Image (cartoon, rainbow, N blue to C red; front, side, top):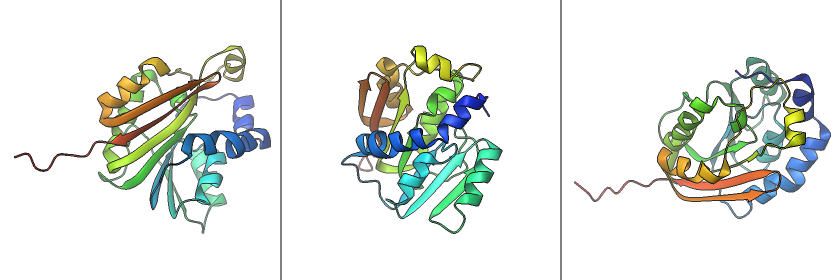
Length: 196
């Protein structure tokens, strides 16, 4: 579990962040993608992205490491199409090829640098062959640093992120940078079953 300051925790549950996610970031990152019938959301936090996603997919599994956040989200979404699981994304409690898509929004920089690649490998493992892993993360700057004072923070370099996704088992990798951060799309590798 990572440390997040009180202001950051408040902001991630705020109407301002929810509006930015719902109106701009999520539609932009996911535009044109087919997510399928059983989607994994990694690190939902208070669930701002979860609310937008659950209206657009048949089943959503949200994997959250923080017991407090997982419990609150589970209670709030009881009886919906969302299963909230408390667990570590670097050791996911799911069988291979479980999901039709995996998504992660502004959470990678809270994962310890030495564990980020383990999370990427786990995302590849739990995806069905050919299915998409997409998401976004923020880039450090003055405002970002102020928001993250006292947080556990491990910025992700978009210049090397594509190669890291490929090393984790993804193909068709696309990384797009913007002023405030970056987004990505990649697909789980399809095994060549014709080889002996």
